[in-house]
Length: 176
Length: 194
Image (cartoon, rainbow over all chains, first blue to last red; front, side, top):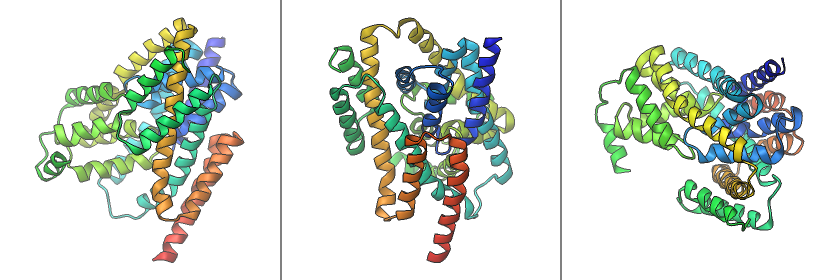
C-alpha cells in the first residue's frame, strides 16, 4: 500500500518535471530538491547532496540522480519508475518534434526560443549551485575547495573528474 | 580541432543498424564521466562520421531547446534520423540501460555504507567540488550575456534565481510565467533591433 503510494508519487513528480526541465537535467535540481527534501521529506538535505555527487561521479547522463532518488524511496522498482518517468515524456516529445519538423528549416522561432530560454536556464543552474553549496557539513575548507573548483573549471580545461577525485581524497583524509 | 574540419568535409559513412546504435550509445554513455555530450560529438562526428559537424550542431540545437536531458533527446532524435522508431529506441536504451544498472548498484552501496564517517567525509568533498563546478558553469554561461550587456537577460536570470532558489517556489508555475514573458521580450527587442 505504502509502496504503491511511493511509486505513484515518484511517477507523478518526475513525469511532470520531465517536461519542465528546460536547459537540461541540472536545471531541474532545485525542483527535485524542493520535492524530495522539503515537500515529500523523502531524504535529508545532505543525503540529497550526496546523491547529486554520486550521479556526477558515475558514468552516464547526469539526470540519473533521479535513479538514486527513486531507489532511496522505493527500491529497485522505484529507481526504474523514477528514471522512466523523468526521461519518457521528454524523449517522446523529442521523437515527435524531430519527425514533424525533420531537417532544420530556416524558421526563426527555434533560435528565438533558444535565446529566450538561456537566461532562464542559467538562473536555474545558479540555484542548483547555491543549494549544493549550502548543504550541511560544509566547513570553511569546503568553501575554499568549492571556490577553487569554480575558478579552475572556469579558467582552465582541467578534467572535472580529477577535481571531484581530489575533493573525495581531501574529504577522506579528514581535511574537510 | 583539425579532425573535426576533416570530418565535416568527408561523406558520411553507412548508417548503423539498431544493434550498432545501441552499442555506440552504450560506449559513449559509459565513457561519459561528468557528462556524455563531448563523447557523443566525438563518436558521431569524428569516429563514425554519421553526421557532419554542422548536422551535429543543428541536432544539438534542437535537443537543447526541447525540455528534458539534452543527451537523452539527442539519442532519440539522432536514432530516429538514422533508423526510425527502432533506431530511436535502440539509441535511447543504449544510452540509459548500462549506466542505470551501475547507478542502481551505487545506490545499494550508498544505502549500505553511506553512513560510514570516512565515506561521508569523502562525499562531502565531492559535493563541495560539484557545487564549485556548477558555479564555474554558471559564470561561463553568463559571459555572452555580459558581453551583449543584456540587461533584460540578467533581469530574467535574477528573477528565476530568486523565485526558485531563494523563495523555493515550484518550478512549473515559475516557468509558465517566465518562459512566455522571456520569449515575448526577446521577440520585441529583436523586432525593434531589425
